[in-house]
Structures are given as C-alpha cells and as structure tokens.
Amino acid sequence: MEEPVVTLLDREAVEGLDFAKGAGLLPAIVQHVDTGAVLMLGWMNADAVRETLRRGRVVFWSRSKQRLWEKGESSGHVLEVAGAAVDCDRDTLLWLARPRGPVCHLQTLTCFGDERRSGAESLAFLGELERVIEARIAAGEDRSYTARLYAAGTRRIAQKVGEEGVETALAAVAEDDAKLVGESADLLFHLAVLLKARGLSLQAVVAELESRHAARGAPPG
Image 1 (tube, rainbow, N blue to C red):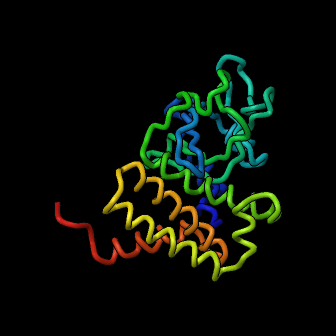
Image 2 (image 1 turned 45 degrees about the vertical axis):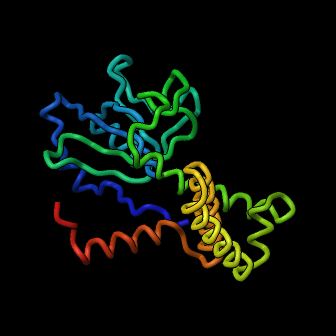
C-alpha cells in the first residue's frame, strides 16, 4: 500500500518557531497519519521539538512535571512520528503520527474518545482494509479466503470483481438497501485485492479521481 506523503521539520523551520508568544511553549496537535483522527493536544518547548525529531517519537513538555515527557514512556503506547507541519503564524505545531496502542490514559483511541469525529475517518478504514489484505496474503493461502484468492492470480481475481459488479448492479434494481450495501462491500473488497495483485492501491484510484476533479474544476454551486 502506498504511504501518505509527509515531511518532517528541517532545522530552519525549527529555528523559525515563535516560542516567545507562548512563554516558551507551543501547542502541539497530534493527528493520526492514516485515519486523520485528531489524537491529542500537548505542549512543546524547543527541546521537546528537537527531541521529537531526534527520537522519531512525540516528546512533550509536561507542565505538571516540569520536564520533557515522551508520550507512552510508561505505557509503551508511543506516538511514532510520520510527519510535521507548522501553522501560518509559526506558533502551533501539527505532528502526524502512528500510535502504538490507545493514546489516552483512559485507554481510548484518542484523548477525545473512541468515536469517529468525521466522515473522513470512516473512509480511512479502506486503508486499514488494504493492510488486512496484505497481512492475510503474507500469512499464506491455507489461512484465509483472501490469500487463496490472491494466489489464484489476476485473472481469477478479475473474474470475481466482474461477478461482484453484476451482483451489485442487480441488487440496485431488485433488492433492498441492506443488500445493495452488502454487495457494494463485496465489490470494494475484491477490487482492493485486484489492485494489490497489480501492485496498486485504492489510494491510486483516489488520486486519479482527484486529478480528474482538478482538471475539470469544481462544479458550480
């Protein structure tokens, strides 16, 4: 599966941060690099920023402990850095990360609970689906339908996509909504396997749709 394009802060960006405005501290928002979920908000001084970049894991300045504090240093639920950005005023940081376990001390996925807060987070499950497909293929064809289908080759997978496409179309005209949703899920799953067999991903399809939209322009509203 293709990884999101992310960047880290360079030395010039770090030196240009405006710590004076917040008495030496900047708010640091942490966002899940794969799902887009906002995981938590913390505070960083210059040393915390440098340590985060050096370790590759998010390090905050703890206002209660008055020291540097690596998220997950007790629980092991660290935040592995995947990218970073600075806001337009250079006084707020955005860190893109992959959490290794629940982010909150209350054992929820984020410090704002487990609920998905946006439609984008739900759609991000398609990326998780691709990771599941990869894992099942790696486990061997005797372990799952996914692995057996993949081992059967592109022609067989393409045949299944065609079958599922027909079943989805028939459900649209002759079945209820639940049946149509179910058949659509089957179609998306088999399409993801087909793309994997060709060394492609659903992200490549999204990129093509975005490219078409940009070329034609947004519809009038």
